[in-house]
Image (cartoon, rainbow, N blue to C red):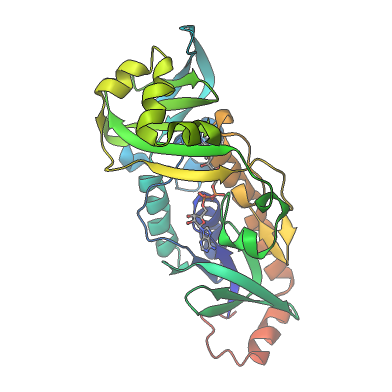
Length: 326
Ligand SMILES: Cc1cc2nc3c(=O)[nH]c(=O)nc-3n(C[C@H](O)[C@H](O)[C@H](O)COP(=O)(O)OP(=O)(O)OC[C@H]3O[C@@H](n4cnc5c(N)ncnc54)[C@H](O)[C@@H]3O)c2cc1C
């Protein structure tokens, strides 16, 4: 029995787990994949979270993330403009950042079940049983949904956005190309845009969002890039000569920006599982971080105020598989 189970170990889930574990709360993260792994993401993090990450020792200094303070926007008609970003941000791959926080979470005492997908939850008398596709199950008093934008759990919870067709696909890979580290560039094309900015080790992240019909009409990613992204005269030379660092691009489908309920089936949602804004804002990761920062102290307070109740729950359950008990 755990005090908290977190479904999904992206930035929101990992940060919540670290904060709870540091507060002495027994926490299990169940993550579908094995770290480190790549994710479709623009990999630009707004500096609005930098002071907070520094203050809790989670800023990824060791990867020397490039500072980004200028935004360039261009269109397929050949227009281009550049502005300062007064707040700015930094670039780091999800491959590195999620893995870095995973190691920090282990250090803080967080337990993990990796390579494991949560398929359903059953709530009874203040305890939630979390069941996985792999046939295992775990119990906790509080369950947090940090399973991102689209998950098996959304299907299980029958969340309305899963029934509505969403028209967006996201595609991402890393490249090498001569680049000014301080710049993030957004290249417009028909029914989409592509962002390029630097991450660690002078690699560039190239990530684009497009209308799904664009991909359907052109059949595959190569033809989509040749026929549509290449319309942008500033992007075409990069696509033509950049060194591609992935064997194949990562692709995600059915990205939805519909609103979502923040509590369902006794699960407290954070990050994209609670709601997603368009990636053009470049703020989804900061929002996932904020949501963890808001939720963790509240869950901590809940356990502080109910510590006797928790002790009794453990006693009742026979504490046969309890990991941390007050
Ligand atoms: C094209 C695109 C570009 C973007 N660019 C940026 C950007 O430049 N800057 C920015 O700040 N934001 C950007 N975002 C948004 C950002 O990626 C997300 O807002 C952020 O990753 C949300 O974090 P999270 O922790 O909520 O979810 P995630 O990071 O998605 O983590 C969810 C985790 O849950 C796991 N999971 C899912 N289902 C299950 C299950 N059933 N059981 C167990 N585990 C499960 C997944 O494997 C995943 O690791 C972009 C998004 C897209 C689509």
